[in-house]
Amino acid sequence: MRILVVEDEPLMAALLSRGLHAEGYAVDIADNGIDAITLSKDTSYDLAILDVMLPGMSGFELCRRLREQTHGIAILLLTARDAVDDRVRGLDAGADDYLTKPFMFAELAARLRALRRRDAIGATRIDIGGVRIDMTRHEITCDGKELRLSRTEFDLLRLLAENMGRVLPRTEMLESLWGSSAHINANILDQYVSYVRKKLDTVGAPLRIVNSRGIGFQLAADKI
Image 1 (cartoon, rainbow, N blue to C red):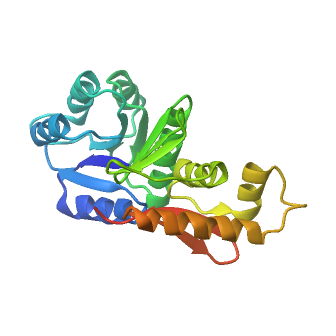
Image 2: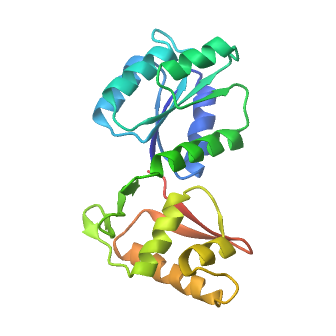
């Protein structure tokens, strides 16, 4: 997932960039609305985080312009303001969500995951770091190279991709993929994770399945 962060405070921009990279996002930074619009014309973004108090062009106006020119982007506004009319103004400008400073990064990450889950309803494709998962055709490609997976392997990678940035518990994965966690040997999950890891490596996919010991698995993207 590629995300555009528009923040004119260098320290805040750096903190956001570092945290979002750790969550598996590819991040571009702009410190004003004009540069943000220029970036969005050349790059397809899945998400945008906009500070409301920007020099020259406000985050409200930038939100409106991005909404007009960019199809399918999810927009979250960041601001020190907490007045109701500002929140309404942001939503009216086309924002999908609104977070008031100061905030915990964990809350921001959770808000972004919620936006992604919302967009995934009815979605037919997931794109992560050059890897495309086509749910309609049940095909996976990495930079144009086809990744041949069995149906269970496909469903495993799709499940992890849909929950990017979250550690999926083993029981949840077993129930989702095999319909039960009580009557299935848990080792089968490890076997399929191993299969998918090897196949991702064969096409040089910038994705890793990370084992959270004693809990489950998480999909992570290499920094881009």
